[in-house]
Length: 191
Length: 103
Image (cartoon, rainbow over all chains, first blue to last red; front, side, top):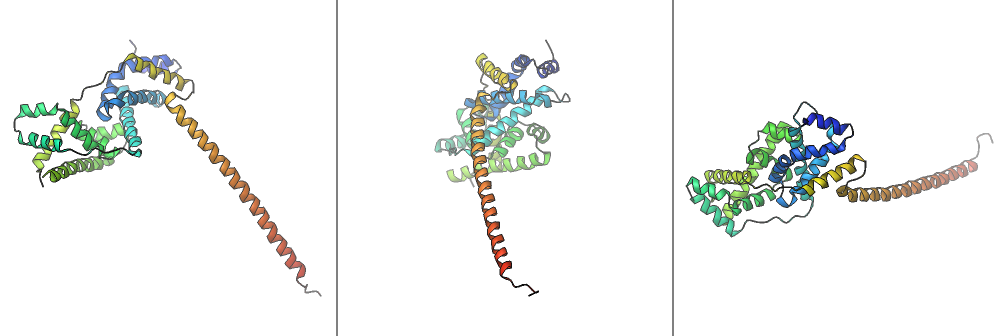
């Protein structure tokens, strides 16, 4: 089995079919990233774009970084472009419902760790997360997801997004503040 | 204010964990074939299916914009020439009617 660099060199020399091997190797990795940033019914379409972009930009791939890392950056930036395109559309923003309010109250009242872990898997948690993220700008959304939800460092997020560390740091702070404000407002309106 | 900072921290922790445990969709062989089809098109210099529509519209818009630009430039040139012709005629008339100092 050839290494990534060998395959990349062959693709760059015109053996386009070799790219299928890279798709095969990194499909799961790309799907995993894309799935964390875009709705599940758009994962296939965005992952498709990631590989087409990777192919188009292959000549610019630097051997100084692992291919997987380079591809991760393309995946994150493609997700960012997805949300930027969506933000130009007039997308309806779903509000929190009384059902969500009741559920949050129940979660906050519950002290047990086992119950907390159980709540993580509940549909309501994902629903609240999606509704909160929907209200953020594409920039804040991406940074919040990378830094606060996935636990990437500011430097890693900056590398993935191709932004400056300072920009990501400021965005991370603003995005977290925005999320907490949303949750706080929700709490105020429910009381 | 209904939620304290501790409440918000707990909610944040819950949302972060919910984000991490999302199940991953599996992409099938047909998906890989679709990607490779676009990549072959890209390699052959053809627009891939998704961007073909956009490209067509970009070219159409560019053609319309170019037509308007030509019309605008043409009319600007025409009126400039006509306008400067009038000025020349007025100046010539003015010079003809001015008595010379030699007379």
